[in-house]
Length: 260
Image (cartoon, rainbow, N blue to C red):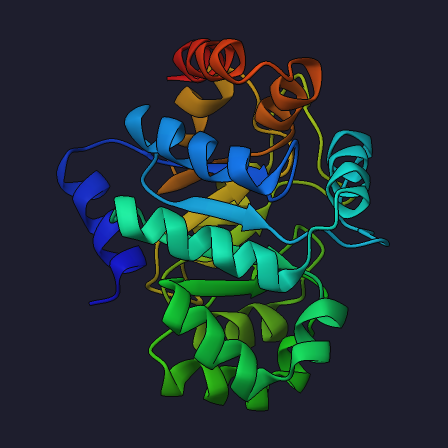
Protein backbone atom coordinates (compact mmCIF):
# COMPACT_ATOMS: atom_id res chain seq x y z
CA UNK A 1 0.00 0.00 0.00
CA UNK A 2 1.35 3.41 -0.94
CA UNK A 3 1.81 6.13 1.66
CA UNK A 4 -1.10 8.04 0.06
CA UNK A 5 -3.41 5.02 0.14
CA UNK A 6 -2.41 4.35 3.74
CA UNK A 7 -3.28 7.93 4.70
CA UNK A 8 -6.80 7.56 3.33
CA UNK A 9 -7.18 4.17 5.00
CA UNK A 10 -6.14 5.67 8.32
CA UNK A 11 -8.64 8.52 7.97
CA UNK A 12 -11.40 6.07 7.00
CA UNK A 13 -10.59 3.89 9.99
CA UNK A 14 -10.90 6.95 12.21
CA UNK A 15 -14.27 7.73 10.54
CA UNK A 16 -13.20 11.14 9.39
CA UNK A 17 -12.54 12.89 6.10
CA UNK A 18 -8.89 13.27 5.04
CA UNK A 19 -7.46 16.79 5.18
CA UNK A 20 -5.34 17.68 2.15
CA UNK A 21 -3.88 21.19 2.28
CA UNK A 22 -2.32 22.74 -0.81
CA UNK A 23 0.70 25.04 -0.70
CA UNK A 24 2.21 26.89 -3.63
CA UNK A 25 5.84 25.91 -3.18
CA UNK A 26 8.16 28.89 -3.00
CA UNK A 27 5.57 31.29 -1.62
CA UNK A 28 6.70 33.23 0.32
CA UNK A 29 9.97 31.26 0.00
CA UNK A 30 11.08 27.69 -0.48
CA UNK A 31 12.36 27.65 3.12
CA UNK A 32 8.95 28.80 4.37
CA UNK A 33 7.25 26.07 2.34
CA UNK A 34 9.15 23.45 4.31
CA UNK A 35 8.17 25.08 7.60
CA UNK A 36 4.52 25.52 6.59
CA UNK A 37 4.23 21.92 5.46
CA UNK A 38 5.38 20.81 8.90
CA UNK A 39 2.93 23.23 10.54
CA UNK A 40 0.10 21.76 8.48
CA UNK A 41 1.15 18.23 9.35
CA UNK A 42 0.96 19.31 12.98
CA UNK A 43 -2.56 20.57 12.27
CA UNK A 44 -3.61 17.11 11.12
CA UNK A 45 -2.83 17.14 7.41
CA UNK A 46 -3.12 13.62 6.01
CA UNK A 47 -1.47 14.50 2.70
CA UNK A 48 0.12 17.70 1.43
CA UNK A 49 -0.07 18.98 -2.11
CA UNK A 50 3.02 20.90 -3.16
CA UNK A 51 2.08 23.16 -6.04
CA UNK A 52 4.84 23.63 -8.59
CA UNK A 53 4.48 27.26 -9.70
CA UNK A 54 3.81 27.74 -13.40
CA UNK A 55 3.52 30.92 -15.45
CA UNK A 56 0.21 29.94 -17.08
CA UNK A 57 -1.81 28.16 -14.36
CA UNK A 58 -5.09 27.86 -16.26
CA UNK A 59 -6.83 25.73 -13.61
CA UNK A 60 -6.10 28.18 -10.82
CA UNK A 61 -7.98 31.23 -9.64
CA UNK A 62 -6.56 34.61 -8.72
CA UNK A 63 -5.25 33.68 -5.26
CA UNK A 64 -3.11 30.80 -6.47
CA UNK A 65 -2.16 32.63 -9.66
CA UNK A 66 -0.70 35.41 -7.55
CA UNK A 67 1.08 32.88 -5.34
CA UNK A 68 2.60 31.21 -8.40
CA UNK A 69 3.78 34.57 -9.72
CA UNK A 70 5.42 35.39 -6.38
CA UNK A 71 7.10 31.99 -6.23
CA UNK A 72 8.41 32.24 -9.78
CA UNK A 73 9.73 35.76 -9.09
CA UNK A 74 11.73 34.27 -6.21
CA UNK A 75 13.31 31.71 -8.52
CA UNK A 76 11.26 28.64 -7.61
CA UNK A 77 11.66 25.75 -10.05
CA UNK A 78 10.60 22.13 -10.15
CA UNK A 79 14.08 21.27 -8.93
CA UNK A 80 13.84 23.55 -5.89
CA UNK A 81 10.35 22.19 -5.11
CA UNK A 82 11.82 18.70 -5.09
CA UNK A 83 14.58 19.92 -2.79
CA UNK A 84 11.90 21.25 -0.44
CA UNK A 85 10.09 17.91 -0.61
CA UNK A 86 13.30 16.12 0.34
CA UNK A 87 13.74 18.39 3.35
CA UNK A 88 10.14 17.80 4.44
CA UNK A 89 10.66 14.07 4.06
CA UNK A 90 13.71 14.21 6.33
CA UNK A 91 11.49 15.56 9.10
CA UNK A 92 8.06 14.03 8.46
CA UNK A 93 6.34 10.96 7.05
CA UNK A 94 3.46 13.04 5.67
CA UNK A 95 2.54 11.90 2.13
CA UNK A 96 3.53 14.44 -0.52
CA UNK A 97 1.82 15.00 -3.86
CA UNK A 98 3.31 17.21 -6.57
CA UNK A 99 0.53 19.31 -8.12
CA UNK A 100 1.66 20.74 -11.41
CA UNK A 101 1.06 21.43 -15.06
CA UNK A 102 2.35 19.46 -17.99
CA UNK A 103 5.01 21.90 -19.20
CA UNK A 104 7.38 21.95 -16.23
CA UNK A 105 7.04 18.20 -15.74
CA UNK A 106 7.50 17.29 -19.39
CA UNK A 107 10.48 19.60 -19.63
CA UNK A 108 12.25 17.42 -17.08
CA UNK A 109 11.03 14.26 -18.83
CA UNK A 110 9.00 11.44 -17.34
CA UNK A 111 11.84 9.03 -16.37
CA UNK A 112 13.95 11.79 -14.82
CA UNK A 113 10.91 13.27 -13.05
CA UNK A 114 9.99 9.91 -11.58
CA UNK A 115 13.55 9.27 -10.44
CA UNK A 116 13.94 12.73 -8.88
CA UNK A 117 10.52 12.70 -7.22
CA UNK A 118 11.09 9.27 -5.76
CA UNK A 119 14.53 10.26 -4.48
CA UNK A 120 12.99 13.33 -2.83
CA UNK A 121 10.40 11.24 -1.01
CA UNK A 122 7.42 12.37 -3.08
CA UNK A 123 4.56 9.88 -3.17
CA UNK A 124 2.54 10.92 -6.19
CA UNK A 125 2.10 13.42 -9.00
CA UNK A 126 -0.97 15.22 -10.33
CA UNK A 127 -0.47 16.81 -13.76
CA UNK A 128 -3.60 18.92 -14.08
CA UNK A 129 -3.60 19.34 -17.86
CA UNK A 130 -2.35 15.92 -18.93
CA UNK A 131 -5.22 14.03 -20.64
CA UNK A 132 -5.52 10.49 -19.39
CA UNK A 133 -5.64 9.28 -22.99
CA UNK A 134 -2.08 10.57 -23.53
CA UNK A 135 -0.64 9.52 -20.18
CA UNK A 136 0.67 5.99 -20.81
CA UNK A 137 4.36 6.93 -20.69
CA UNK A 138 3.79 9.12 -17.65
CA UNK A 139 1.93 6.38 -15.79
CA UNK A 140 4.60 3.82 -16.68
CA UNK A 141 7.45 6.06 -15.52
CA UNK A 142 5.74 6.81 -12.20
CA UNK A 143 4.88 3.16 -11.75
CA UNK A 144 8.51 2.12 -12.08
CA UNK A 145 9.26 4.25 -9.00
CA UNK A 146 6.09 3.31 -7.10
CA UNK A 147 4.69 6.81 -7.39
CA UNK A 148 0.92 7.31 -7.57
CA UNK A 149 -0.48 9.07 -10.65
CA UNK A 150 -3.51 11.08 -9.53
CA UNK A 151 -6.00 12.27 -12.12
CA UNK A 152 -8.87 14.73 -11.96
CA UNK A 153 -12.50 14.26 -12.87
CA UNK A 154 -14.91 17.16 -13.33
CA UNK A 155 -18.69 17.59 -13.36
CA UNK A 156 -18.50 17.71 -17.15
CA UNK A 157 -16.44 14.51 -17.56
CA UNK A 158 -18.21 11.91 -19.70
CA UNK A 159 -18.75 8.39 -18.36
CA UNK A 160 -16.21 6.74 -20.66
CA UNK A 161 -13.54 9.18 -19.48
CA UNK A 162 -14.55 8.65 -15.84
CA UNK A 163 -13.92 4.95 -16.37
CA UNK A 164 -10.51 5.65 -17.95
CA UNK A 165 -9.55 8.05 -15.15
CA UNK A 166 -10.63 5.50 -12.58
CA UNK A 167 -8.45 2.82 -14.18
CA UNK A 168 -5.41 5.11 -14.51
CA UNK A 169 -5.43 6.71 -11.05
CA UNK A 170 -3.72 5.39 -7.97
CA UNK A 171 -3.76 6.62 -4.39
CA UNK A 172 -6.95 8.60 -4.79
CA UNK A 173 -9.06 10.34 -7.40
CA UNK A 174 -9.42 14.13 -7.34
CA UNK A 175 -12.94 15.35 -8.05
CA UNK A 176 -13.21 18.99 -9.16
CA UNK A 177 -16.49 20.19 -7.67
CA UNK A 178 -17.27 22.71 -10.38
CA UNK A 179 -16.30 23.78 -13.87
CA UNK A 180 -13.90 26.70 -13.69
CA UNK A 181 -10.86 27.51 -11.62
CA UNK A 182 -9.71 27.12 -8.02
CA UNK A 183 -10.90 29.59 -5.41
CA UNK A 184 -13.02 29.94 -2.30
CA UNK A 185 -16.79 29.51 -2.78
CA UNK A 186 -19.75 30.02 -0.45
CA UNK A 187 -21.28 26.57 -1.07
CA UNK A 188 -20.64 23.23 -2.68
CA UNK A 189 -22.66 22.69 -5.87
CA UNK A 190 -25.85 20.82 -4.85
CA UNK A 191 -25.22 18.04 -7.36
CA UNK A 192 -21.77 17.19 -5.92
CA UNK A 193 -22.93 14.29 -3.73
CA UNK A 194 -24.75 12.58 -6.62
CA UNK A 195 -21.77 13.04 -8.94
CA UNK A 196 -19.35 11.57 -6.41
CA UNK A 197 -21.63 8.57 -5.93
CA UNK A 198 -21.70 8.11 -9.70
CA UNK A 199 -17.93 8.40 -9.81
CA UNK A 200 -17.64 5.52 -7.35
CA UNK A 201 -19.01 3.28 -10.12
CA UNK A 202 -15.76 3.96 -12.01
CA UNK A 203 -13.24 3.49 -9.20
CA UNK A 204 -12.73 1.85 -5.86
CA UNK A 205 -10.16 4.51 -4.93
CA UNK A 206 -10.83 7.16 -2.29
CA UNK A 207 -12.31 10.35 -3.76
CA UNK A 208 -11.20 13.79 -2.60
CA UNK A 209 -13.01 17.02 -3.42
CA UNK A 210 -11.21 20.15 -4.48
CA UNK A 211 -11.82 23.59 -5.99
CA UNK A 212 -13.84 25.77 -3.65
CA UNK A 213 -13.71 24.03 -0.27
CA UNK A 214 -13.16 26.83 2.21
CA UNK A 215 -15.38 26.58 5.30
CA UNK A 216 -16.42 24.16 8.02
CA UNK A 217 -19.91 23.56 6.61
CA UNK A 218 -18.49 22.50 3.26
CA UNK A 219 -16.06 20.14 4.99
CA UNK A 220 -18.95 18.68 7.01
CA UNK A 221 -21.04 18.18 3.87
CA UNK A 222 -18.15 16.59 2.01
CA UNK A 223 -17.63 14.18 4.90
CA UNK A 224 -21.05 12.66 4.17
CA UNK A 225 -20.06 11.32 0.76
CA UNK A 226 -16.35 11.91 0.02
CA UNK A 227 -13.09 10.61 1.47
CA UNK A 228 -11.01 13.79 1.49
CA UNK A 229 -11.06 17.53 0.91
CA UNK A 230 -8.35 19.61 -0.73
CA UNK A 231 -8.08 23.10 0.74
CA UNK A 232 -6.01 25.46 -1.39
CA UNK A 233 -6.96 29.09 -1.88
CA UNK A 234 -8.27 29.48 1.69
CA UNK A 235 -4.78 28.66 3.00
CA UNK A 236 -2.77 30.33 0.24
CA UNK A 237 -4.66 33.55 0.99
CA UNK A 238 -3.36 33.39 4.57
CA UNK A 239 0.18 33.04 3.24
CA UNK A 240 -0.41 36.01 0.96
CA UNK A 241 -1.56 38.22 3.81
CA UNK A 242 1.29 37.56 6.25
CA UNK A 243 5.02 37.38 5.66
CA UNK A 244 6.30 37.17 9.25
CA UNK A 245 7.06 33.45 9.80
CA UNK A 246 5.92 33.00 13.41
CA UNK A 247 2.73 35.02 12.88
CA UNK A 248 2.03 33.20 9.61
CA UNK A 249 2.28 29.81 11.31
CA UNK A 250 -0.22 30.83 13.98
CA UNK A 251 -2.64 32.30 11.45
CA UNK A 252 -2.43 29.14 9.38
CA UNK A 253 -3.22 27.03 12.44
CA UNK A 254 -6.23 29.23 13.21
CA UNK A 255 -7.49 28.97 9.63
CA UNK A 256 -7.28 25.18 9.73
CA UNK A 257 -9.08 25.16 13.07
CA UNK A 258 -11.91 27.11 11.43
CA UNK A 259 -12.32 24.31 8.89
CA UNK A 260 -12.12 21.16 11.04
